[in-house]
Each structure stands twice: as structure tokens, then as C-alpha cells.
Image 1: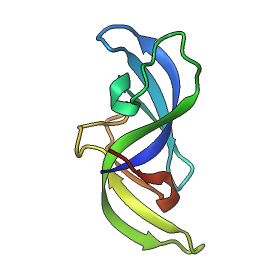
Image 2: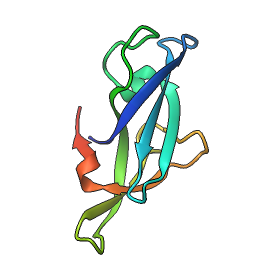
Image 3: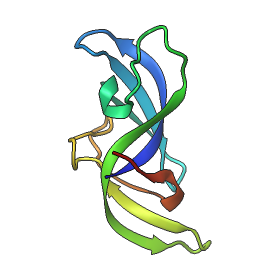
Length: 106
């Protein structure tokens, strides 16, 4: 499975369990995207209000396209709706990011 690296920036609430956290992603254009969901969506660590933030996280995604940018960097389009229906707080699920932001995980 592939995922996009994100920064988990804060703990929001204990309800529903296991708790809600906020994370941020910067796309290839420098735009910041904010996500809020259950902590287990972004991390296998047990997170709570006493955890240290920020910390690394991952959103599972699907790569839908890739190309080389004018500056030579590899860019990929990702869809966070697959496989776990994750969307930014504004509803978007499609993002263009650098290939180096993508990781393989289980």
C-alpha cells in the first residue's frame, strides 16, 4: 500500500475513540491541506492530548498519474478517497505531490 507523508499537528478531541487529530499536507504548489480524522487513520501510534506534536503520519492513497515537472522533479497525482475515504476538511481528495512524499507501508 502507498501513502502520503503528513505532519500530525494537534489532538482535537477524545470523542469518538480512539480520538481525533489534525494533520497537514503541503502539495507540490505549496498549498497547505488540513485533514481531521481518527488518529488510527494517520498513525499506528497511540495518540492522545499528552502526545508530542507535531509528529509524522501517513494517509493511505492511490496514485492516479505521474509526470516530470518543468524543474525535473517527479510529480504524482494522488487520491486519498481510496482506500479509506479520507478527505481534506474542505472536501478535496485529489492532490498533486512530489514523488518523494510517497511511502510504501503496511
